[in-house]
Image 1 (cartoon, rainbow, N blue to C red):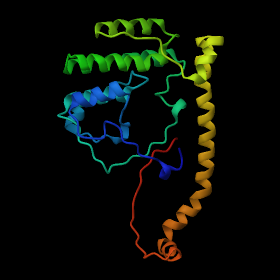
Image 2 (cartoon, rainbow, N blue to C red):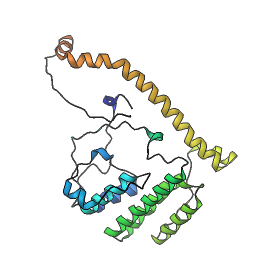
Image 3 (cartoon, rainbow, N blue to C red):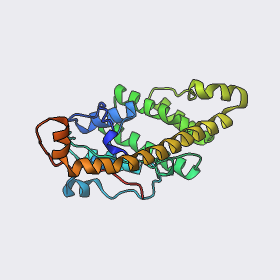
Image 4 (cartoon, rainbow, N blue to C red):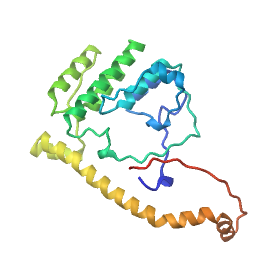
Amino acid sequence: MYRYYRAKMIPNSLWCDLPPLEWLLRKMERNEYMQTATWLVSRELTEAAGPWNAKLLGDDDGEYFCRVLLASDGVRFVPDARVYYRTPWFTSLGYVGESNKKMDALWESMKMHIRYLRSMEESTRVGTACVRYLQTAMILFYPERPDIVQEAQSIARDLGGQLTPPVLSWKYAWIKAIFGWAVAKQVRRLLPIIRWTAQRQLDGLLFHIARPEEESRDLNPELESSKSGAPSIHTSQRSHHGRQP
């Protein structure tokens, strides 16, 4: 959140060179992605992909990079590249919450994803990936938007699959059993926000406390080396990390 130097880079199935079809298959089937700032795209490819869809209020970057993939020969992964992104999470554009406008926009983006993938290949594995993609997102629409759920179910059947009602974790399942879906979904939205806010405030405090010490070490590497008894070797590195406005 603030102490970017403590970030852990956790590899996923997209951390390799991949052709467009395989990249999109893995993204949708496994619910994985690359953050927007990780992409390096040529002007020629940008023009071929077309303009950013500013009408989408959620997953607009996902939809855009689908088109980049479709216009490309494939993705080249750079193992040593790093980007630090400080996410504002529930205050971000991508956070859906209870907004019907964002649900509508996300659903449009999802249908575009499915069309893009099916345009590359019509196969059992593509159908399976699309159904899993739909199933993963059901928790965002169920039960508040039966219209979207019904349409998703129709698409899943067309793909040879079947959607099931989303399953809540044990932390919220008992709330649903006693108070119903609406209350369980509210608690499921609220508790992570409270936890995230507390973690963010604590991390910000610790970052500002540790900052003078970090800056002192950066400015006096020889002093730190002499304290440890190790030879003095100073390598200058730059880290780029997103800052919340």
